[in-house]
Length: 106
Image (tube, rainbow, N blue to C red; front, side, top):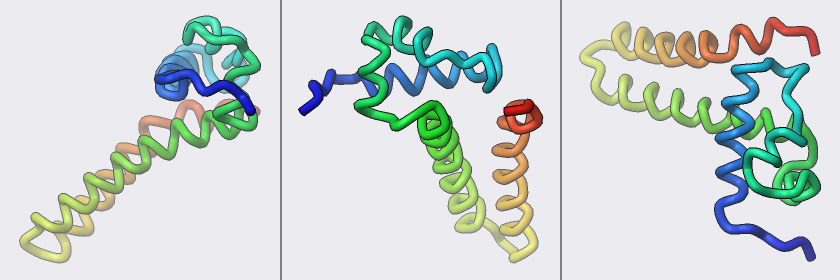
C-alpha cells in the first residue's frame, strides 16, 4: 500500500495549478510539480493517475467554486432574469480562467 503523505495532495494541486498557468499544458512537468511539492515524482501517482487527471482535479475545484457562486446568485436573485444572469457570470468567469489553457494544443 502506498504511503500517504499529509497535505501532499493539496501541495500538488497548488503547485500544479500555478505551473499550469505559468507554463501551459504542454510544459506542465509532473517532475517539477513533485520537486516543488517536496515529494518524489512517483508519489503524485498515489493521488492522480496521470497529468490529465491532475488537471481535471484542478479544474473541478474551480468549477465547484463557480457552482457555489451560481447557487448564491440564484438564491439572492429578485427575478429569474437576474438569476440566469448570475449563472452566466459564473460560467463566464470559469471559462475566462481556463480559456488560454483550452486554446493550447495538447
